[in-house]
Amino acid sequence: MSFFTSLWSLALFTLFSLSSCAPLQTREAMPRQLGSDKLVFAHFMMGIVSNRESSADYDADMARAKAAGIDAFALNIGTDDYTDKQLGFAYESAATHDMKVFISFDFNYWSTAEGAQVGQKIAQYADHPGQLKVDGKVFASSFVGDGLDVAAVRSGAGQEIYFAPNFRPGFGTDLRPVDAALSWMAWDSDGNNRAPTAGRNVTVPDADEVYKSSLGSNDYIAPVSPWFFTHFGASSGYPKNWVFPSDLLWFERWNDILTLNARFLEILTWNDYGESHYIGPLSSKHTDDGSSAWTNDMPHDGWLDMAKPFIAAWKSGSNDLASNIESEQLIYWYRTTSKTQPCNDALGQPDGADHMADSVFVVTLLKSDAEVTISSGDNSQTFQAKAGAFAFTVPMGLGKQTFSVARNGASVDGLSGASSRDIVDYHEGDIYNFNAYVGTLPAANGQTWQDTNMSTMLG
Image: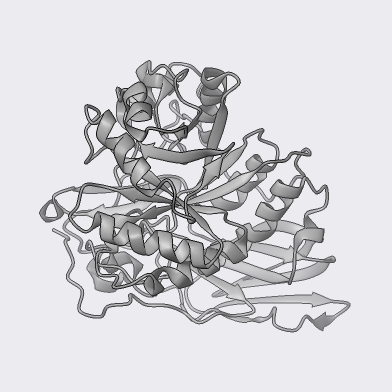
């Protein structure tokens, strides 16, 4: 999916004092204030699931998301001929699993002149048992769509709707006609759709404040995203080759969320493999847009595991994150090659690469204090980790990546082991891959693309 436009970013840039990027530091998860009526969504790309053959192909996604505390999938749709077939499958699966879904209209494909048609599409699924309703109204959203006639949408729906689009205050869009708005500003940038520079840094909390101020008493959907890397060549039809600062973004943003007064959260995304911010399994049935070149054997499942206690704490207003940890885990992630390693890649190194640290990142989810040892090649450090969620980093080293957790001198069962992916001194497939490999202890099985005969769209 295309990222927010540079005009929106520049509008934010003019509203804030800008600061240079600083290294991310180890932080303890902070408790949030008491709240209620909180819902968590995950953005789901329907444009890459045209090969699904029944509602059963959505079942694993629904079950896994629900188990993590996600309440609904935002089903991002274009105008493809398979859209209604796949929506039918998704709605049916959601109802089976006591999940909810809603339509998110992608205005890269829909026209802002189609307000009535948007409303009619909402009405088409409004009475389905899988449809999310908020305040008794049918919920719907969008990706961009500034200039859409909201009154025409409501008229076309023919019933009360809770409309929460990704309209952007930086465009001068009037947010009064909507019930809520979603920010897609989930990554720090320079205000011009690239990584921050020394004097230009528009942060995610900056966007939070703009939205909250512009929405007044209306609700806000705050974005949460773990990563951003994309590496498409000209032959793809949508060339883009950049990263946004991501290193400990997932952990840092959840800390922000715990103290942010937002009624809704939206995880960006469940399955946008092309921009590397997926938290759903690679085994989830989908087609290839060329991104298998940097996502194959690069699971992100551990990020969803890490989010689970944060989601529970945010919803319940708990002052003790440790009490929301059902089972202890160690989640780790890293790029498999240093950014300084040369590569014979026609696209070149992605813009913003200098903002990515050559480090191994670890988050511990512990019920009581413990000692954590992280070894990246020859680099080994030991940390004291408290109960709750803590983050640690060590410099990247070639070779094996090993981790251990001990209490009172004894290893904790399941929390010691080695990653299945080494850090190496070459680039697999001769491409700059700035995607993250995510693993967990206790260990989970790695995953590959569901299909094996994938073509790439690089060059």
